[in-house]
Amino acid sequence: MKTPTQKRHSSGTAKAALTPVHYTVDMATVHDHLFSVTLRIAKPAAQQVLRLPVWIPGSYLVREFSKHVQHLQCRQGTRLRKHQQDDKATWTVGCDPEQPLEVSYQVYAFDNSVRTAWLDATRGFFNGTSLFLQVEGQDQAEHLVHIASPQAAPHWSLATGLTAVATDKAGFGTYRAANYDELVDCPVEMGSFWSGSFTAGGIPHRVVVAGAPPSFDGEKLLADTRAICEEEIRFWPGKAPFSHYVFMLNAVADGYGGLEHRNSTALIGTRKDLPRLARTSLAPTTHKQPEGYTKLLGLISHEYFHTWNVKRLRPSELASYDYTQENYTELLWFFEGFTSYYDDLLLRRAQLIDDATYLKLITQTINQVQQTPGRLVQSVAQSSFDAWVKYYRQDENTPNATVSYYTKGSLVALCLDLTLRAEGTTTLDTVMQALWQRCAGGPMREADVLSVLEQLSGRSYAKELAAWVHSTKELPVAELLERHGVQVHREPDQVAQQLGLRVKEGNGLFIHQILRGGVAEKAGFASGDEWLAVENLKGPAPGPWRVRSLDDFLLYTGNAKEVKALVARDGQLTTLTLAMPKPSQAVRLSVRDAKLVSNWLGNTRNPAAK
Image 1 (cartoon, helix red, strand yellow):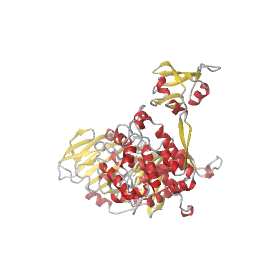
Image 2: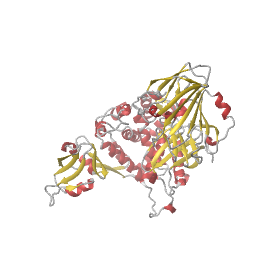
Image 3: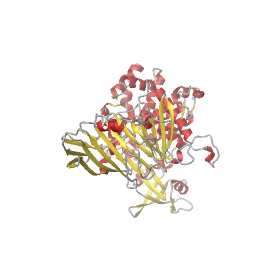
Image 4: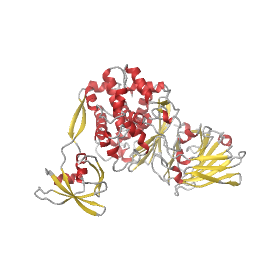
């Protein structure tokens, strides 16, 4: 099935000549990792200002994309025009307003993430924020982009959410965007990728997978992705706000993440987590879905939910993007956190996971938040505001100073949903749908959340949001879960958490992070230490014993109340005295009352309805 991006049109050349802003992207060779871009401005200003974004919406960090721009030249006809660089990402060109201006430059592309651009012999990918200079004064005009088929890779195909004007069968050619925002919100995937399609809610969807192994079961991924899309389209009121959608998944040896866009998403996942054809597997047949694949489905669900919650219904501070600097908001606990709550919940409603699996996923989130000392330092609203300098710039002190607006935000959504359900007035589903209608799928403030909550529940939730969002008070997660048929168990925590550290294991045992208040901090461990050996002075064979993992540590400590730890720090050997910690506990959830749990999780639809 062809998607809208593969249709042929005959008016592309003529339309390009009339378009105010037109880009051409060439890949003469792919081994140099360089995209060649030509920008044509039909009617430039006398002092035309050009800018490249410093960040990409959805990833809240100034990433300095301009550092990859080189060989910028400006021409009008055969005449070179001088340009002046005003700052790190802004250029001004003096020119004749009566003549078209042509700007050519190259962009180095070797970041294999969902945020920037990549080009090599196997694959090409880019976000417009990495490639396309913004033309000051004409950002609301129509933009065209022509992407030429690479001569070095004639077998490649192209996928994007942009609207086709004139393209070949492989998808290369000319595309249209209504304005600059739309242009840079539609990434482009190129290569010899696997491609499949389905219809959900009457809307064509395309899935492309780069780097898929021979064992990849594409039909299963399509079926499960379709179930997710149908569930989420049903969740939101009215017609879906897009006419076609593209999933772009880059399968790699090790990686995980995604970035949402208006009618597409760029995903990166581990190759071994893809669904596999049964006939290609030598392993025993199992009916249990691998955890890695469940995680991948959760990522797909998360980014697709963002098509409504953050791309349309968005923080009022981000009603209009300023690509030149940070755009601050305290509402990421809602837009990322609530999306994180619904991504797995909607997998359950789509019957892609069962109750036990869903509770296991919640267990992981609860323990992750509880094991973060920073939850007592930073509110989740502060976490959102500080994302630009803290969340995306993590270091050895991050767990002690910050809390994730993804994980704690999802628990805020959980607490809110279970509280509403316990009071019998409404549900978080209804709140989300009412917010969509109240804000017309547009900018939203925290005041809108409070207003809708009061309107639907009959009481104010200002006290709850003040405690759960704007303070560092603990959330009533366990109490609320138990009221909805979930048994909360307390079990011994992992060794690393009991010691108060996070490690990297492999060719040795390396200390990555020290948690505030733990016995490792009191002993004097520091980030970067290599833990070499442990000596148990009370044991029958005291050592010292070489340790390469925390399992080795358990093997040689026994029931000792105190041991000696030998560490290497900056080339020097140091012996530390480590007191054994008091046992700490983690949470495990199970179903106590299946009916109550089912009422919450929405496990009511007939499986045959799929």
